[in-house]
Structures are given as C-alpha cells and as structure tokens.
Length: 125
Image (spheres, rainbow, N blue to C red):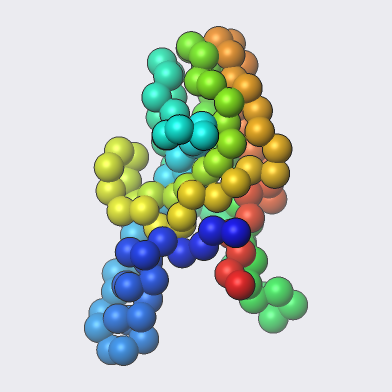
C-alpha cells in the first residue's frame, strides 16, 4: 500500500515541528503503466481538488468527491496499473506515492478514461 510521498512526509513532519507548510493550490492525478507515467497522445494529468475530508468514523481515508475525467485516449496509452498525485500538471512534487489501481485497464485509441466519485482512495496506515 502506498501513501504520502517522501516529500509530503517531510513537509508534514516539519509542519508538526513548527515550520510553516503551504498546502498545494492544486492536486493532479497521474496515471501509470507498469513502466512509467502515461505519455500517449491526448494524455495529461487531470486536476482533482475535490477529496473527502477525514472523519471520526474513518480518519485515515479520503476519496475523490468529483469525477476524474481524462477524456478519450487519442492513441494507445497501454495498460493502466497505478496512479499518483502531484502538485503540478507536469513535473512538480509527488504528494501521494504511486498506488496500485484495484484493476488494471488497457487503454486503446478512442477509449474513455474516467474515475467515478469515490473510486480513488487515499489511505493512511
């Protein structure tokens, strides 16, 4: 199980120890094949700033609270197996480490790629 990236862990610990931390303005979901981040024609990280807040019932889980729609692949993207969250649409800091999807999915030209509300979970252990 993945979780906070080393960058996010360091920022959180520094924040707890009194250093200020400015939360990222935006969060982008990135999709990965077994080898690397997708790079096919039409692929781009997708902005998703809507995540559920932790609750007393389950303080260690947050899920996407809006549909994450990557549109339609304009080329073969390969087999999607994982996702991650960054603070930028390209480059940037890895916030949530690369996490396995529940099921892999082959994306060919013309295939739509989206995640319904509640489909991506961020879980701390």
